[in-house]
Image (tube, rainbow, N blue to C red; front, side, top):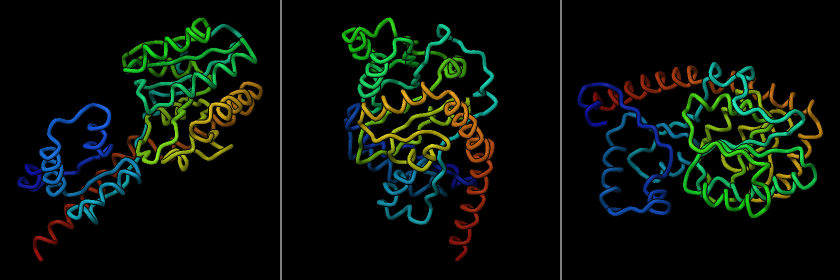
Length: 287
């Protein structure tokens, strides 16, 4: 950011999370004061800051030096990669309803709630499958939980996969889920949800943070209370029973991301922000 400023080039800093707090809670942070100094320095140097969610923007506004320079720009998707017509890479047996999840299997992804919801669904109808795409720190616990519930045969875990493999795994799903638990600080802009939508999947997500406004309930997907496996199971059962609803939601979801969340459109917005931020900085310097 300092080099960009010295070179007369607009420097935009994308902020995905309150990283110091996230690092301290989930990974461990050795030098909090040093991290805080670096954070303040880079924030001051940036011509503008791009937050991926309103929640991240609120966190950024705690720093007086950035006020008036924060812009919210959610994540997006490449609809040419994630399309409804991508051949399924892991098709289920005919007549099997597949509930799918893509992610790095971390504690905040709500996998315990998802497994509980799927167990309820599978208990009502054995012609159901759980497709989990990705690896991560919770993978061993997930496998253990599924085995203990007798769900190992009804589940397919891909482990970590190459990005190029993900579109075909998403089209192997009937429904894509983002079952985040209750959180007082949900600041994510989940890529998985945009990708489910672009692939024309029906989506079921927790009513938290950005997801509560991204998904129009009953129009582009279904919203559920966070941390409620019974409600999630009921939503999944409904989508299993009503294939026409799945189709309608999936079509509307893709239309929504095509209109507002293509990477090309977001890149245009970044360029607009860069131009405006630099003009404002130059005006302040001249004044």
